Length: 61
Image 1 (cartoon, rainbow, N blue to C red):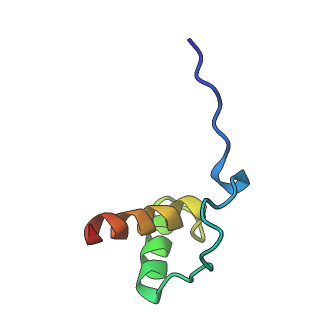
Image 2: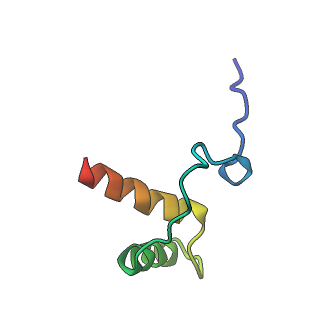
Image 3: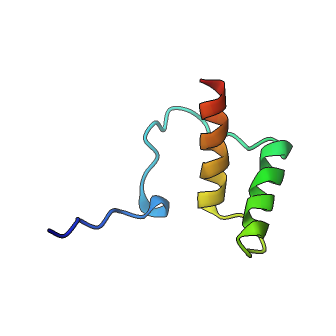
């Protein structure tokens, strides 16, 4: 059985548009840059940013 292809993250709309966008604090930006560098990328992408935000959210819960 084939799995249906998922929509890429960059094409999805935000779930809750009533909240304004927030910038990541400097510490999170630094961690995202380090993660990108480990993967051989010159700068962080959406996946790096989301992974850092997810890690912090798990830490807070």
